[in-house]
Length: 435
Image (tube, rainbow, N blue to C red; front, side):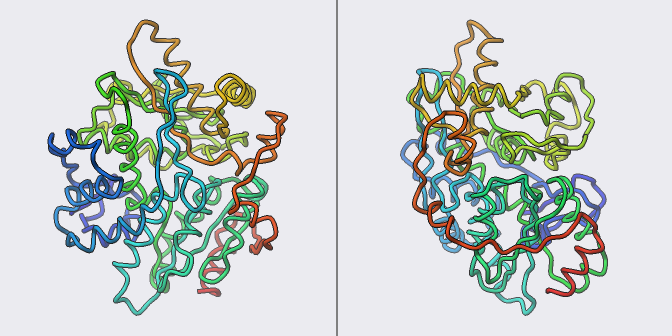
C-alpha cells in the first residue's frame, strides 16, 4: 500500500511509514494512492459477515497484501471486540450506536485498531514510540484505553482545560503508566496546533520517535470505515436510499464514510452535522472555506474551528465545490436546538441520546423537511454514551440517568495531569525533559 501527502510535496510512503510518522514532512495529510472498490460479491453477502470479517476484507483489499492475512486478521480481531447495533426509532430513522467499546465512544474503533497496528509495526524497534494526541473530548479516553500498557509505546494527551466533561477528563487522566495527560489553558484548536508544531520541529523529530493518534493519522480513519458497512448491513430494506447523518468536529468520521462510499458502499449522501462551529456547512453554502476560532458548546467534542480532515475531503473531491455538494449536505444547530432534540427523542421516542448524536438527529430531520416527498432512510451516528455527559443530560431531561459500571468507577479515581499554557516552547521542553 502506498500513500501520498495532500500537499503533494513529500514523497510517497508505505503504510508503516504513514502510520508511525503520523504526518508527512510537508505538513499535509496521508491519503491512499488508490481506494479499491470492493467486489459486488462482498456487498451481497454483507448481512452474513461479522464486524471482524468486514474489517478484515476492507483492510486486505486496501493494504494489498502489505500485512499477511493471519497477522491482519489477528490485529482486527483483537481490536473489534464490541458491537455496533442499529436501533430504529421510526421506519425511516435509525441510530447506529458506536458507544459499546471500553471508553463508551466511537473513537474506540480507531484507537484500538491503531494501538494493535502500531505495536506490530514497532515491535522490533529499540526506541519507544511517543504518541501525541489532541482531544476535544472522546479521543483522549479512547486512545488512553487503547494504548494503556502497550509495550514500547508512550502516549501524551493534550486537552483544553474546562472544555471536556468531568467523566471525559477522568477517562484520559487516570491511567498512569505509559499514559500522560496535559491540561492546556486554551481551546482544542490550541491543543491541535501544539501537536502539529511538534511534528514540524526538527529537534523533536531527531530526538523522539513521534507519531499521532488523532484523525490526522490514516490508521484512525481506516477502521472507522468498518461501521458504515456494519450499519448498512443491519438495514431491513437496504434498497431504500440511505443517508448517514454524522456529528462532525474534525470531520474524520465523515471522511471515513466517504472512503466507504468510494469502496462501493451504496450511500446516497452524508449530512455533515455541526454545532455553532459551522465552518464546513458555511463552505458548502458559499464555496468559501474560512476557518475561525472555535466556540464552546454543549456538544464539546465537535468544538473545532479548523477541521484537519477538511484537507482530505478537499483532496477526495478534487477541490471542487460542486463535487462536495453532490454528496455532503451541511447543517448547524444551536445548543437550544440540541437540548430540544434530546428532550424530543427521550419523551416521544423513549430514546436517550447524547448531545452529539442529537445534533446529527436534528440534521436528519432538517434534511427530510427540505426534501419532502423523497423516499429515503437515515442512519444517525451516535458517537458517545449519554452518561459521559451526565450532568448536562440530567439537567436537560430533568431525569436521573444510570451510569455504566465503568464510568461509576471513574468517580473515585484521582485525576493526574500536567498544566500548561498554549506556548509551544513550554510544551517542547516538557517533551524533551520527560521522554
